[in-house]
Length: 271
Image (cartoon, rainbow, N blue to C red; front, side, top):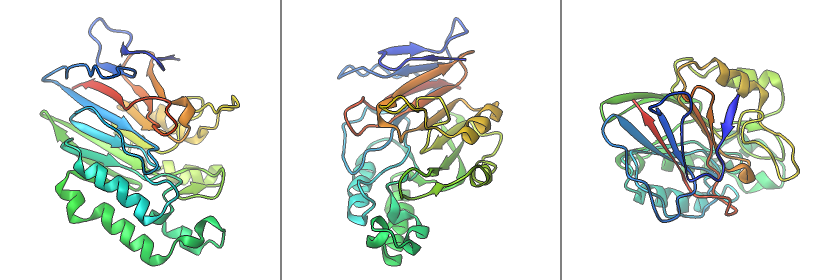
């Protein structure tokens, strides 16, 4: 059971008099003030596709994939330069299905889309995402990886995955339930902040044609993450928005930006 808040200006979590999660979706130029000590402000984006956007300040910036337009190294570099210029002290980034220059398996494919990707492209792209400049800017590129970040005295356990069910040829995709289970089995059960490119099934995953295209296996995994406070994703641009689930202790955020469906989503989470 959940409460959809897509299109709302400010929505607190449900279930308690004092909310532990507050989401800001449509705020225009009036960015709400940081709630202060004892809270972490996450600024969530996804599917920027080599575009750059003005973003509000925050403690942690999350980018949930599709960094590039069509997976070329130069396109990725545009996004990386933008991310490195942003003032957020910590930046968590995963790739998406468009980011073929980050997926070594795409070199082996003979499809037209992948014909532009070489081993040298992949080596350069991965070096950019993990290089000294990225580290100096507080950027952490996660590819089926977990990490801990500390802000305001709170240490968060984060996991990032670029994977998505296959739709058209792209990067980091899986074809069946067995592959999905192998991918999501790797998510630590004490994860507090989950970042994936794909949405879970029936959570902000509805296409323009009304079809739910999120991952059922991911949905089952999220339900087992009893400490998870937030799941950030993108992929389905037209379902941009957020959901505060019943009980008010977890938010799901579709942060897709491309196409003009919405702004960066601000999520304030109490420690």
